[in-house]
Figure 1: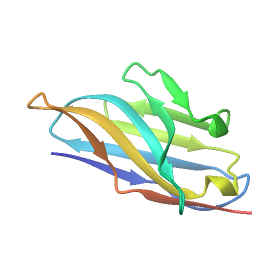
Figure 2 (figure 1 turned 30 degrees about the horizontal axis):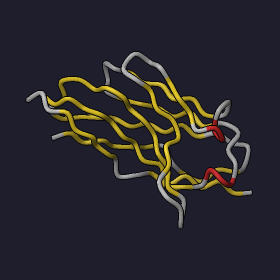
Figure 3 (figure 1 turned 45 degrees about the horizontal axis):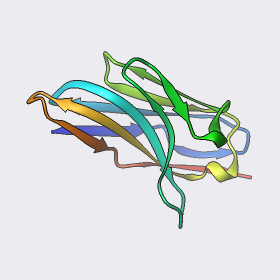
Figure 4 (figure 1 turned 180 degrees about the vertical axis):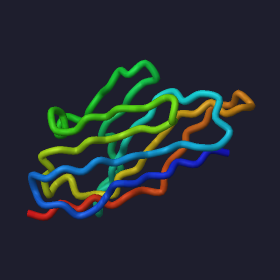
Length: 120
């Protein structure tokens, strides 16, 4: 089994910054793509940013230039640096990882979510 544990959410004023972290642990052989999603109240979960195992990145258009995703493969950790935060960034942020486990099966795993609240 694989667990994803997120940290770093909280309350921040508009224009401020937060850094989210997500650490994967368990029976990991390798981790392919890792990403961050968010879900605001009454809305569907949406992709915020994704990073491949070779560090190619892609961002949802509203966060380009403000957010930066990165990863530490040795630590099985993905980060999301969020700058110039806006009230519309308020949501629960979820970490996602495409993991090949020790028995060589691939599965998608999710973290428990961390709340980000941006006040105006």
